[in-house]
Length: 140
Image (cartoon, rainbow, N blue to C red; front, side):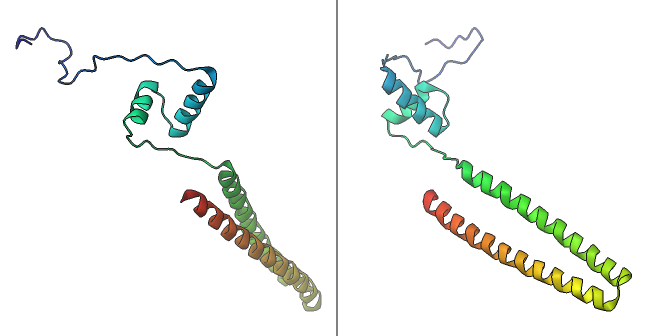
């Protein structure tokens, strides 16, 4: 190679000059495509080179049930906050507009509903712990 450079792209020291052609049947092609999708790769040549030379490649598995569960859990806790605000407003109205005896009856009903809500919250926390254990086993 000469030292004279006419411009353009600088020459590579270790050029990839050798080309190998590989043919796949339909089932092999589908498997290669699935493997590439799991590894989040888009360039087939790079993916195949990594497979041949044993270089590690990452496989990211996304669990849609985890995303759905987290979304429902967020929705549940936003509803929980709404209930808390409504609870405060109800107690203020009971105190301001009802007699002490009637307010006590309504507050006792409110307490029962609150205990039910606490039970539901406990169940949700148990489900979350089970889901967390299941997810942590999958990620190992």
